[in-house]
Length: 575
Image 1 (cartoon, rainbow, N blue to C red):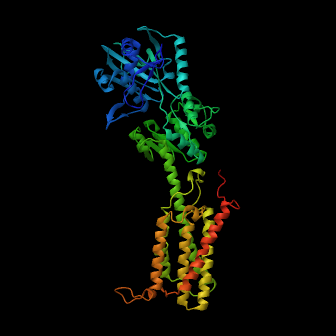
Image 2: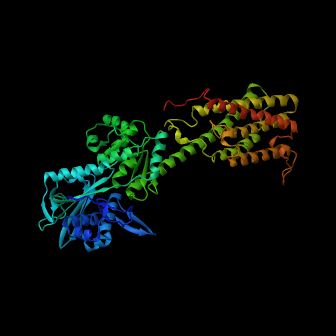
Image 3: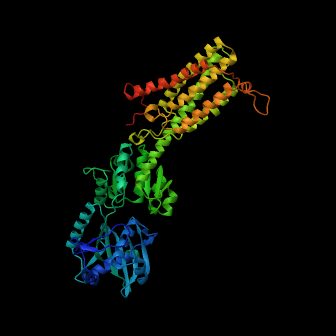
């Protein structure tokens, strides 16, 4: 948008191919030649080509940009008008630069241009109002009028309402009296050249990613340096906020104390014109409210907030080295959707860890309870020898436990709310299941051991106890694949690792029991002497499997009742 006309530009991304349009019609070569002779257009195009620090290049057949995204977008526009921005800058060498900062919200450069030195400046439109004194009209530099500001403000609002980032372009010729190192004096008495509306549409997958976040109980907030209307429009488009909830600007945040800040951040999703210090305050306020905060950023000024957040996430492509060093995670493709995928993967891993812990702890609880009840309470002979306990923990339970770690994600973990920060592992629900399943295994093992003592030798009873306890664990590992879903719903053979582990454990058990009379190679010991086992008959194995399967059947019945809503166990009041 120039002071007198509004132009469009064709093309997408960083590919520097496109033409100007007016009233939705591409300009002809003659019309472009006439525009290039216009002083205002020529200065505006030169500002786009010179006032940036981006590099636009073709790499492996793909046009890419290195630098700030806004700078890069302006540079690509300059490329489409003036040709290669690198060659244009060589023809017009840079003399000095005033870097962008969040207070001024603009950057300025001084270049040799058309026989003299010119300062070109670009940045947020609001910051130039007091600095602009001139405009270009009919090829002449004339004083700007109040009505011109009103027209520019209206155009600014129109572009911002369409989710465009609006950048103002200004310039002036440097005089001999100017000190080119004095930023205040150089960025004054400027000529208003026009404004550029930049639209960076969200990737298609972002809409679904935000929806998944909302279902998962994750609150998405947008903190940006864009003006309020632009931020509000983008937020509504992404369904981060609603039309009746306005974005909160940095000027309002500046007036709030810490208590008021906590109230504001809890109910607001969009923050505009935010300074680095205010980003820090927003993160701190959210943490004070008990939230776990993941903060994304790419600039040097984002580093403090990235460091303060529970999880700092920097951009791998557009991010600065300072931002990457301050962050906990670097997003290699700058894609927000991959953050959500990482959350999903993390929840899946945590679920598998819970299953693993529940299985291992239930085994140990059952073993300890079995020894205490049998030997201490009932004064029976020791049901398991130390060697048998060692075999159970390392060789029999180890492989199935490890197989639980590769269990696939069955239910949608992103449809659940986040777990409480202070939740223990195992949590209360896990502990109830551990003692519930452990109690079944202990009771069944004690019954088998008692009957075996009554009907056979101590060695026979200990072997029966050893076998039934191991089979209890093998049935229990199928229970621990999920604390909610039935094994038949998960798929009996959907986790091949578990069934390979079970096969290995059963094979090893048969070896040490049925092969109890075998002599260990290179020794004079029999397997039965080492592990205190004796071969069992077919009916004994039938009893072992039948009794051990009760833990599986009882747990499947509990899951059936749970799925019908007859009862449920709640561990958190958090919705």
